[in-house]
Length: 218
Image (cartoon, rainbow, N blue to C red; front, side, top):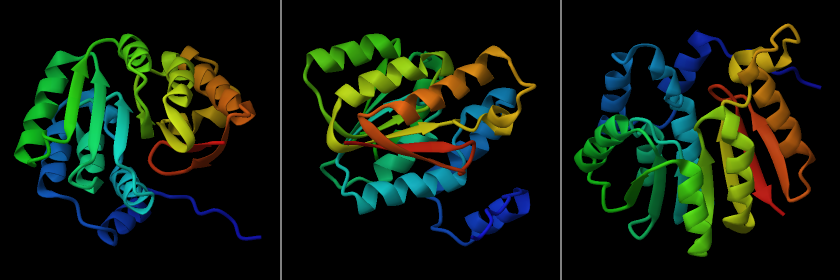
């Protein structure tokens, strides 16, 4: 059996240099986020941008829900992969970063595909459920304490074979360190176990960026 490769910064750079090239506005968002200090960690990785793009293209995804938008890199990455009649509803409660994201969407001529709702995500998810909305793909990348709530809502907002993708599930590798017992690390561990035991989906954790879980509704 082959062993898994440890992806260091050099290999990550090699992967990015030999993968599909980013859109100029994706690069601009990444450059903008570099100046934000510690919160730039909320941005998805470049390899995750490519993965989401290919997943959407190959699965013929048309309707996406995103929980957690930040400055819009993941949203834009997914929107660029959608067909002209595709759409994204993006949920975030931060007005400042959401306004920044909207400006980037307009610059990339993608604003017609993206509807950004600025409100607490649980409130928005309840509204979407009441409206009987359904999505082909849901991407979760928001506050970790609510991951289980977001996941359960998401399962109800997709049909059979619908996809749920969740970011940060490896939590900087700390999920395997038993000495790490802080609230967020424990929260991610418990969430991963919860998803793995959930009979409504089948799941795989992929070591891209900070770890992505991909779920298919059964």
